[in-house]
Amino acid sequence: MSTSAPSFLQDLLNARSPSGCEHEAHDVVDRHMAGVAEVYAKDALGNRFATVNPAGSPTLMLAGHIDELGLQIRHIDKNGFCYFDTIGGHDLTMISGRRVVVLTKNGPVKGVTGKRAIHLMTPEDRKKVPELHDLWIDLGAKSKEEALSLVRLGDMVVYDHGFEIIRGTVATARAFDDKAGAYTVLEALRRLAAERSGLAAKVVSVATVQEEIGTRGAIPSSYTVNPDVALAVDVGHATDHPDCDPRKHGEHKLGGGPLICRGPNINPLLFERLVACAESEKIPFQIETDARPTGTDARSIQIARGGVATGLVSIPLRYMHTPSEVVDLQDVENTVKLLVSFARSLAPGERFHW
Image (cartoon, rainbow, N blue to C red; front, side):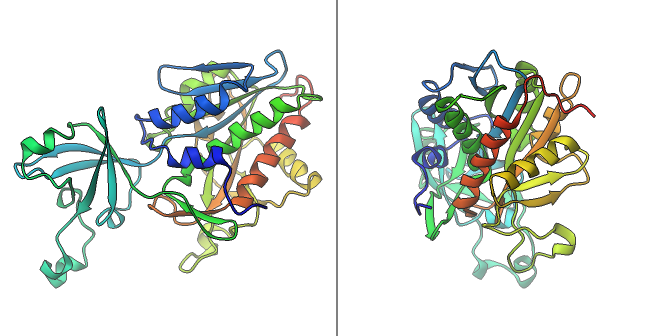
């Protein structure tokens, strides 16, 4: 496989799109999908819907979220330092000392996250996880007035960490969670659109929003699409690194293929079909277990309307919710192949009722 990422994926990774401020990701999806889909639409939350074979049956929904973690400015002090709240699940030990970008109506504004230096801490302070109000963003401004000439209260912020290949097909980026998953559902639709022969299903790929704050985009989009069958694609924990106990978290490795989930959030017949598709296409895969509603769009899609036969495919990822997430691009490509194979496996009217 090429050691460079597809341009579509790189465009999504470069787009800055914290939950509720997904404009840049919208632009990428619109540019790559509007001319490919037979039907293309958006809604009031910012979800994007791309459809091929609109007269087909069953209706298959593929969902991947385009939002990412972020920060939001909530206070600016007299010296121009900006205090913030978190958007999504942050590890507070990771925030300080980062380059950041504030997304303003007049364009991006650069800054860094600050905290008291270790030299100025007591031994007790050094052992503590910082509290959010002890962290700030430094814009280089000298006063509140100067800071307010650059940014507004409520402006959103992301880390300024871009895509980079580490070695071979192993890459790092700020927001593989879940730009990688969003890419796979959209790219699968692009490939299905290019070769529709034998496709019985209507396929709707949805770039969902606000997953990081409660799978909010998946809720209305599931009602809009009204799918018979659905697959959410997100990232899952690769546990093949130090200090991760497989007895607690399972044994999943980078480069080992997509994770196919089993558990109460997952339709058991659909799980078996995914495994059969992977085996038929000789796609490497791993099994992930989750005894609860998963922390993904699958949890909302499954219980939409009268209930939806739902599956979850996850891309193995190290260091989730940090500024330097790591994936193997081979796993991303194999996930696309699995989605295409699954879509083509659906018989007319198939529902996975059990």
